[in-house]
Length: 128
Image (cartoon, one colour):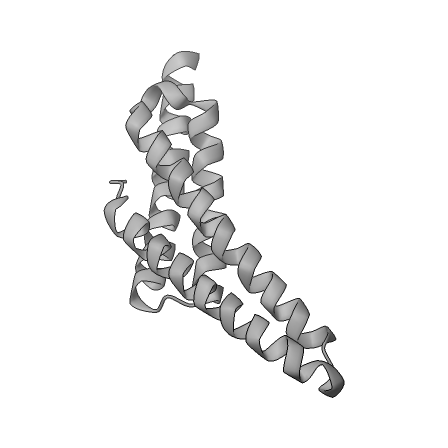
């Protein structure tokens, strides 16, 4: 087998593995849209994007853009969840009147971005 063929086979094998990992994370997230599953989806999508960046000529540009949009949506949801978690941990009883409404708004925004991520993930499928 020539070096070019071995390299192509290796890239194809890597792509299949990363696509399978993405699809598993996607299924788990679509089944239960939790922040834990969102983090797993984010990791799988980032690894897939990295592979696409290296071997982008193998994937249509519209698929790469859709993956970038999904990652942007996931970033919004995870950032809001992180801010909410930090605020909840740092606040004490004296701050409750001020913090409670802020936590409520952050939770609404987090839910919004989780739903948006669900829709984006539902439409972005790959075949291994």
